[in-house]
Image (cartoon, rainbow, N blue to C red):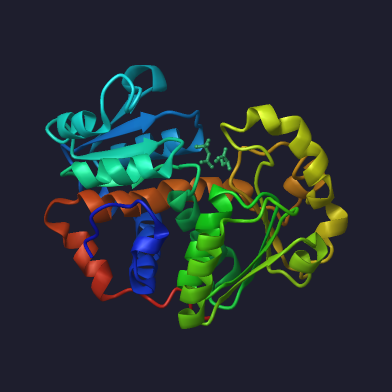
Length: 325
Ligand code: CP
Ligand code: NVA
């Protein structure tokens, strides 16, 4: 710390992830202390896919830190098509202080980060969604009082959100069990990385095809859309294959009596989750969405703050967020 880019949860040590969560808690509890920390700084937000939460929380978040966000739509940039990734990176580094990118190919964000002399934040790729994972574990910590040792069941598609949930869970000592239909498992290299890191932190990462096995005694039941952005042509086939993986009252009843329901949103009520579960008192989906704001303010402070004072302070004194209270 301070960290350079925020492209993958895998790029950091468990201590750095804990420090980011610690900072997010402080930013959330005392936002006024941070309100001019990024004064005069601009974040360019390149969106090649739609968004509600990511766009609003980055925009509002940097504003609350004294900075300014610039929204660049798919039609404006057309990364790598209208202009090469190399050229866009070398333009923007002379105009803004950081770039957030939401795109399809993960390699494109890595390539951009390799060229740009300014921090790059991954706002979702087909492979991962690290900002989401940070907000997810912040939410679990707030609601359950700990992360280490929590049993987190992800039920649905082994997608970008599942990957980042596995990565952050492994960093923080959680037990993440992913249940998917055959052929929709998380990528093997993602599972291998999560298993290796979890072995060092006391967590675990398991894969099953049985949603009831994953849900059994879980502290957290998490799901996401069956059809991610860019897969729309597969939607009908996916609705059929994923039906047994719907999070409904019957499946949720397999979990701990005080289990919570999580979803990165947008949700498709009646598909991956029923309205009954989504609106139940055990659902924390809107707190989770709000935590995107606080988690990303911590990320922006870490990568953008001139002098890195906040980053250094939190690197040195990360509270043991993952420890049981
Ligand atoms: N969860 C999430 O990233 O939401 P958006 O796609 O609306 O940004
Ligand atoms: N898996 C989803 C997440 C949306 C926030 C998608 O990529 O569309």
